[in-house]
Every structure is written in structure tokens, then in C-alpha cells.
Amino acid sequence: MAKAKSVRRGTIWSNLRWIHPQRTDYGTGVSALKEKLRYFTYRDDRDVKAPSGGRRWVDHGLGSTHGEILKNCQTLTSDDRLAWTMMISPKPRLMMLIEDEADRRALVESLTEEVIEHWFEARGFVEPTYSYVVHDRSTSEEGHQQLHSHVILPGTVQTIGGRERFDNNPNDLREFNTLVEDLFEVHMDRQLGMAWRQQWAAIQREEALRKYWQAMQWGDVPDELSDFAERMHTAGYTVESLPTDMTSSDDLNHWLNNLEARGQDLDAWFGS
Image 1 (cartoon, one colour):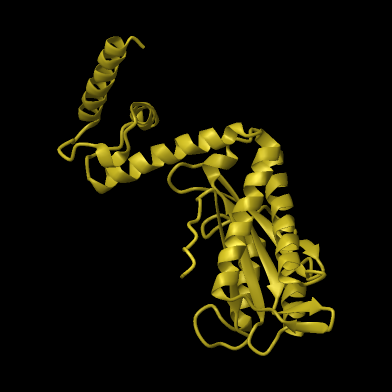
Image 2: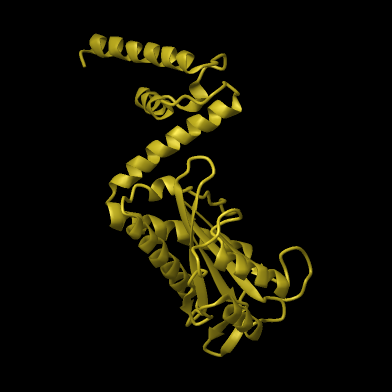
């Protein structure tokens, strides 16, 4: 029986990709790695520069500057793996549940290091060599802070028998993404207790309603979308239950009022 495909829970986004030492395609070769390292060092995103003086890398054996990291990756390359890049980016709306910005940054840093330690342990590797940097940017739609980390790992790993080629097959990558989600949610439990999980469920309901509203082209998204989503949830309805002839927030409010009135009638009937 084929193994069921794991579905990412959406609390955090992550990826793990490799760079070939030769220029074989876009994003490969030493020049591509050099460009990535300079970008990670000096910019938060395409349009926003890092604070004056560049960005300090957190060095775990691979280097504290983009020049050192590039040189060490070239030294520790394998036949077809110059380096691996990793991104770890928690859902901005979830991170905003943590009020203190310093606590949010500390969580991303701690999570990044814990992910690598657990990933190497799960793969049977020892002494991970890597460097990472935390970027601070704003999301394009909501303007929330989007703290995320970029990690560079060399193309080989240290094993008991010496350095060997570092490789990750598709199943490894799926397990990696699951590990990131699991560890992030543990960190959120430590930071906020279990209450954030109910808040996350409410956020998901609102986002599902927003996506459905936009797909149906019903005009401007209502400001009170979160309230509408919770009223639907309380009534036991999902976005698939919405009438297709709806065109405005007034229509949605009218539909919800009818549902709620019907529910009150049933409560009175059964003596609730």
C-alpha cells in the first residue's frame, strides 16, 4: 500500500535545496552561491536593505561572513553538491501572537538551531557545520513582520568514517518539513501555552473564507471577515456551504442572520 502523502499544516514554511558546484542551470554554480550569500548578508528582501554595516551571520563552523562561508563551502564540496540552502519561515500571523519582538526573534533563532540538530541526529550525522542569518521583512498583503532564517550547509557532512556527500531524497525532504512543523509547534506551546492552537484554527477559518470570497469574485473582502468566519463556524457551516449567488457582505450577513435565527428557534423548541 502506498504511503499517504503528508499534508503540511501551514503553521510554518520551510525548504531545503542544493546547489551544484558547476553552472548547470539558473541558481547553480559558485557564482550563484556567492550571489545568494551577498543577498542574505545585505538585504531583508528584494526591496529592503539590511541595517547599515551588513548582517551578522550566526556561525556554527562554516563562517561569520559571506566570504568565509563561500570559501568553506568550496573546501567542503562533494562531486555534485556545493552547498545546501535552508529557509525556515513561521506564519507571520502566528508569530504576531507573541507580543515582544525580541521573543519572536529568539524563537526563530532557537528553532533554526534545534531543527538542524534534530535533523542531523535523525539522519545519523554528527557535528553539523552551518551558518545562518535571520531576516526581518514585512508581508506584502497584511504588513505583518515576517521573521525568517536562511541557513547555509556545505555539500558534505561529517560522519564517523570521515566527510561524506550530504544528500536528501524526496522522502527525506518530506520528513524534514514535518520535523520543522513539529518543532515550531512545540516552541509555540512553550511560549504561549496551548491557547494559540485555538487562535490558529480561527485564523485558518478566516483565511479559508477570504480565499473562497476572492475565488468567487464577490467584490471587496469585508472588513468583518473574521467575525463572519466565526459565526459560520458556530453555526456549523464551512465555506462550501455559502450560497453561490452571494455578491456582498450584506448578503453574507443576511444569510448568517437567517442561520442564527433558525438556530434560536431550534433551541427554543428543544428547551435548550
